[in-house]
Each structure stands twice: as C-alpha cells, then as structure tokens.
Image (tube, helix red, strand yellow):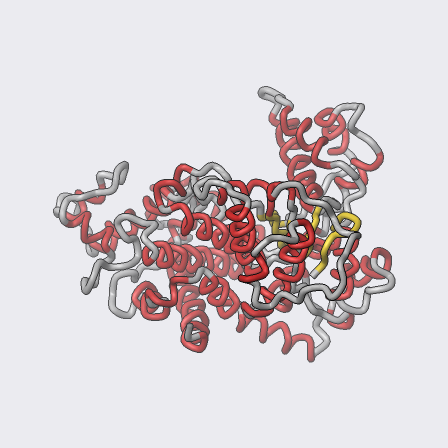
Length: 509
C-alpha cells in the first residue's frame, strides 16, 4: 500500500471538499434559494446547525461525511458488496456503473422516478447526468442505512443539499479517489483508517503549532492531536500477547500459536488466569479504538478460535460482533470507521447476501456529552423509578457532561449499569414526549456506562499520548482528582484505567 499517495490524496480531498461544500452552502442559504422553497425542513435544520456551531463547523462536518461515504463505497465496490458499483465504473468505462445501468434503463429498486425523467429529457436540467447521479448516490446511501447505520445515516437533510457538485468529471473527487484507492490496495480494510489519519493530519499540524504558542488542546481537538495509526505488526504483537495468550492458557493444546508470529510464550506455566469455557465468554475492549485496527485483528484471531472449537463458519461473524468485541471512542468519525471496518470483516467471511441478512452490529460506543439540570433530574426519577434511582445512578448520570473531553477514563459509579439499562430501555411512556426524551438520555448514559464497566477479560489499546502541559484546564483538573498518580500524561492514565477496566487476572496490552 502506497501510503504517501494516500496522504497526498486525503489532504487534497479535504481541501477540495471543503471548498465545494463552502460554495454550495453560499448558494443554499441565500434567502431566495430554491432549497428554501423545496426543502424547508432540511433548511430549518441547516440554519439551526449554523446558529449552534457556526458555518465552518458545518462545512467541516459535511465535507467529511461525504469523504467517509465515498471511501467506504469505493472499498465496497472493489470487494463486490455493491451491485451495481456506486462510485466505480465497470471495466474500462468512465461513468460509475450505477449511472451507466440507469442510462440503459436499469434503475435500482425503489429509486426515484425523477432519475429516468432526467436521463430521457422529460425533466429539463443543465446537467441531467450529474443530477441523476446525485439522486442515485443518495438512494444507494439510504439503501445501506439498515445494515450499516453508523456509516450511512439517512441522507435526507442538509447533508444532501450540500453534496459536492462535480462528481463525474475526470478531475472530480471520485476520479481522484479511484486513482488513490486502486483495487489491490482495497483488499485490506485498514486502507480506510490510513485515509482518515491523513485526512485529519493538517488539523493535527495546526494543533501542534498552537501548542508551541501555549494554546491548550481543546476537547474538540483531542482526536486530531492524539490519534496515531498503529502499524500492523504492533497490532499483532499486542493482540496476540493478550487475547491469544488468554486462549492458549485455557487451551494448552490449541494450534493458535502457529499463526501468531509475534506471540511470546511464557517461560513457566501460569495458574492465575481467567478461566474461559467457550469463545462467546471472551470480552475484549479497546477503550481508544480509533478506526478499529486492534479490533479487526482481534476479529481475525477470534474467528480462528471459533473455527478451532468447531463452530459453523456462517455463524461465527455474528457471534464475534455480538459477544466478544467492544470499542470505545470520543471521535464520531473514527468510531464510524471502526464499526465499518468490523462490518467489512464480517462481510468478507459471509459474502454479500448473508452479510445483508445478518442482524448483529459492531459494538462501537462513541461517547457523547450528556447533561442533566437539577430540574431535569425530577423527570429522570419518574423515568427510572424509585427503586433504581439510587445515589450511584444519580452520580453516574452526571459523569458524562465532559465525555468528549474525559473519554474512557470515566469510571462509572454505578456497578451494574447493564441491568438498569435493560429495565429503563424497556419502559413505555406512551405519548409523554418529555419523559420519552428523558428516557433516551438516560439510556444513552447507561449504554456508555455499560461499555466502561469492569467486565472485560482483555484490554488492548494504543492509548492517546499527551502530556499534561498541553491539556485543557478542565481535563487537567479532573485528572488531578481522578488519576493523581498518573496525571502527567494521558497514556499513563489509560494504563491505570485498564487495570480498572478488566476483571481480576485479565490481560492488558
């Protein structure tokens, strides 16, 4: 894989997409724009987003959303998961296959009738093929929403309105994407992680320039400042000597060591280790999972473990996603990529049809800030019920106000959030919108707390490295209280956190 070419493309693509989305935004938000007449609901959301975060943040978010989708679709095209191909042509053609098929009269099932009208001239347009292709692209993204909602959220809001215009020319973002992601390089899903690291690399440089001027790393910039792609040999070393080691301790006769090139066998026999009865029992967590490289290799190793135990091949991917792997992340975009990477691991084992039928989804928990005012806690009490509304629950609900800043270092006060989550999520408040909204926020906190509970056999991570000098004041002050002995650098705090994240005698790598 030519990473220099990927870096050049990703950096150029970010700037190109930001320029194109910026230009589109200027047209769309004009008081006299057609979008205001034809898409009032989407425009209301767009105006609200701009008011809340500013134009620059909206542009950055939309630009990356399309970059994410384009790269994912290219990977899926090459590996045969899309039919027809969405962003790639067939053979030596220049048009994406989905457009070529539509021009031949073969529209995807459920596609808007407007597409045919544009292509046969019944609907006037200055760029009928470009407009038709944009509709086909939205339709394809929406079709993938059910199997992969983390990557393909429903496109029907302002993200669609701000889609880049030039997608079919020889200099378009998609033409450059196909050159940067040749078919041979798309055999391994880690290409998506490389692209993301390079996409945010210029922002990372800006953060470090700011550090030299004594500008602290804000919560928003922690991902850009600390994310680092982990080379595959390091991933293998860490996973093989934690997950692999645990399995071999439980199954001394296993042949797993034969495929683990970086495994270091213990010199003496060990007796103090967690006992595993069957593969489904193993719980593995990466508390700073990035785009999922630890988890995807853990998937491969677990697949071999299930195979060795005699499980049917078509059942294994869903079992792994359901029982074995959890990733926690503060970066929404990286979390989506981690989930996508695991989904593609499953698809590679199952094939397209079985993958589409699989109900299991990757367990990637992206932490979100959730706050409750004293007045709102009254609604929470009604949602939870008197028996469950304990001191520990109330404290836990208030622990995630700075979740994007404190991340996986948060140690929930509630010891068994899973049971509370089950009860609260099952309650039905009928048409009481106020209580429903409170319920959703309580469930969100409990899901995060459950992911951060002490239940894992294995914790494996390449943690963030950031000295206390560069951290924002809120994070620094919190570390002094919660991680007094390891507060000098985030990586040290994460080691401390790992000890509290795994069961007694578990494996930390």
